[in-house]
Image (cartoon, rainbow, N blue to C red; front, side, top):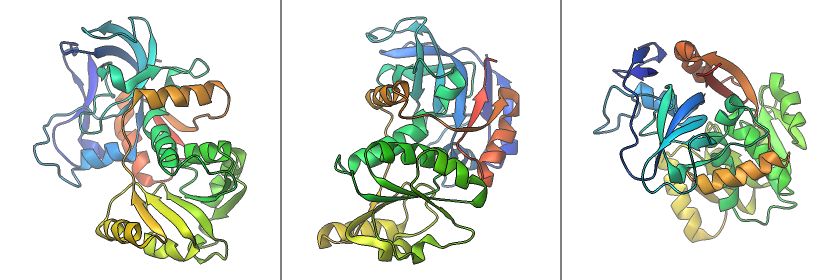
Length: 315
């Protein structure tokens, strides 16, 4: 099979097309999926760059955590899927494997593909959709009427977070650049801040929840615009964020929280229901063929993608 691999850490130029043996579902509860499309996420680029370097991490490696495709074989113990089923899944960023013609997917990490999405559209959902869905769920169901600010509202996670927060009845403010203001309004934001013209941390408005989907503003910078019981949540850990998450927990005032997404097929089923109901829709910036994965990673690293970047493997 054809696959994208990297044999050393570095820039997107370390990615190459290779011919590899087709993986075999020899363990229990595994699906062999013919991959139609794979998403590109910032975490994929970080793993490829080797920053941070993870001890015991093996190379060469196939990147990619978002996968959408068709089940071709199953191993023992699989009960929810059969060959021919259309599925989508999040693979562990540590294992990767999505940017190839075939991928092994643990049954518990897969869900049926939404019927109203194409395979490339479905590949845009797992990592970003699960991140937004799980972040907001962890904050509780009582979000109706809450003021929520989403920093990075036009990115992969941000576009899902805006839609999910609105579906839960929140008053949503999105932060983005001027070129994406209309996009963020179009997916339901009540107010949009162009960060090139206005520093949202200097606002007079107070927010119950700040989701920093790009982790480029600290809790210290955002603390003054949180309500007395407000919470700031980000996806990238830092020493400062860890410190504030601990002190805030004990003080009972404004809190900081670090979030880590989990690959759960059950949550993808919940997202499927939202998508099929018309409540949620992935936003895709660009498609790239498998052979242009280097360009896809380079574009992701610009930080200017509006929505998701998708690699099409079956055209």
